[in-house]
Length: 330
Ligand code: PMP
Image (cartoon, rainbow, N blue to C red; front, side, top):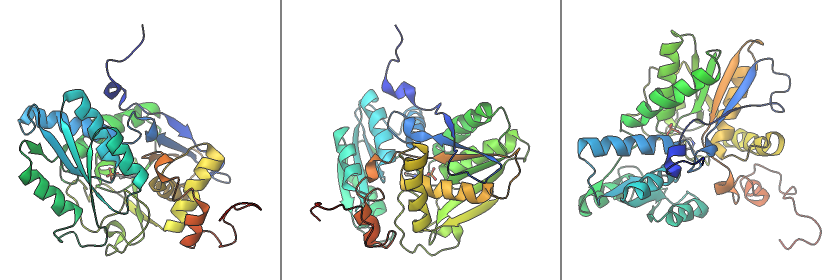
């Protein structure tokens, strides 16, 4: 019989898929690391497992404990999977800009979800950071992984994602591109790839316009899961050689093209990272190999980036291109 003991055993070892249509006119090879093929549907499965196991070893998380985390969804799914296997409860705190579809996924895995307003400063008592801190104080046996400051977040990418990419490209990767949220992916993977290549691999961060990583002040943007209005500890400022700023419009355009032209139904932060990767690849020679991380799948965003009316309401599509045909009830 061929089987794994538990779905958690399937975390990691995601494939690299070559981009073909989007790279028309580009000489370099652009490879996407497709993280939605993790069992929880995102790159965050990787960090969930490592953070929980480290907390068990340190005694911060004990049998029967509750995992409390502010998360935009993906980290929650990863934690919920690991928690189920190990018998912990989960309470997740989300900002209200996170789609209802994503919140329902967390509930489906058996987690409790607390929703907080997006439009308040991080220091406000109702911000999702502060609400989660309060819950940790109030719930007995609660443990907060805190992906923003937990060193096991970048460590999971240093020990797993980085070595996978190096092995999969036979050491031929020349450029690594990742969106920056907590900074865990770029810091851990980037550090490993720089070390193993003795500094030859260029590391490029992709960031939404308005976020701190590209010099912004935290002005709102619509892409979910990336960009910050503060500097998290998980982000190592010494790793990225360059940060490429991507507008919401470009992020969503490339997200839709990834689905339509490459068969990759992925989230908006994937379009953002891919847009940055294409911009980098445009000026590179034939022997360059660009690897871009696509953090999650697109099904959580069907009512947003893949909805013509939502896109038109923000001006990303002209108002007359809502995909409506005669007979549609609008
Ligand atoms: N894309 C999505 C959809 C995410 O949820 C995250 C994590 N917040 C990222 C990208 C960024 O990854 P990291 O936190 O490792 O920087």
